[in-house]
Length: 185
Ligand code: ZN
Image (cartoon, rainbow, N blue to C red; front, top):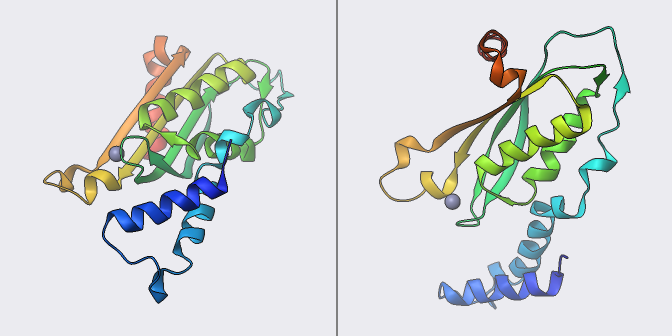
C-alpha cells in the first residue's frame, strides 16, 4: 500500500542524509515532488494483470505474432535507480489472441514496481502463458541500468539483455530463430 507521507518523509531524510539543506529555496518542494514521482514509479503494485488480459478468440490464426519495441521504465530493487529500455514479445497463438495495447499495459504493470530485469522478463512471459494459453511465448528485454552506468568502472557495459522462452519457443529452435530474426530485421 502506498503511503504518501512516508515517501515524503523518506525524501526529506535523503536530503538530510546527503548533507543538503531541505529548507533552501530550490529544495522547498522537492520532497513532495519526489513522493509523487515515487507513487507514479511504483503504481504497478496497485494493478492486477487479470483485469487487462481479456483475450478474444481467433481459432484460424496459428502463425507467429511479434509485438516488438514496447518501451518501459522501471527501478532496480538493489539501488532504487532507474533502468529502462524495450520489451519484445512473440507468441504462437492457440486459438486466443490479445490486443496490442494490452501487452504494453502488462509491461507497465510489472515495470512500475521495484524490479530486477530477469524477474520482469519472467513475469511478462508467465502471464502471457497463463492468460493466452499460447503454444509458446518468447520475451526479450533490453535494459540500460543507471546504477551501473552512473557509477564505478562498469560504465561501458551498462546494457543487459534477458530472455525467457516458454512452450514451443523453448522446444522448437526454428521458431525461436524466426522470432529473434524478426526482432533484428
Ligand atoms: Zn541496481
